Length: 74
Image (cartoon, rainbow, N blue to C red; front, side, top):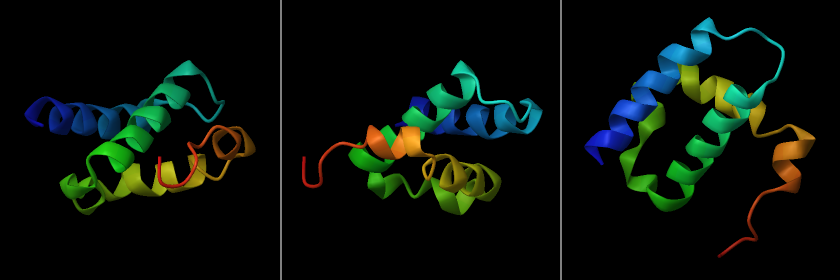
């Protein structure tokens, strides 16, 4: 979990430097955050990384992200 926490911290810094046009970097970070939410909800990363959390909330509402969500309860 230490490596995951470091990765989240790096993602939080990275999104601040990224431009607005969606690219593979945006998708990779969004997928990683979705994985952490799904597999490690106890990490509560949003409390420490509010900018990343706000960014991810917008990203996860995109139709492409919605279309690729795993089924509930899986």
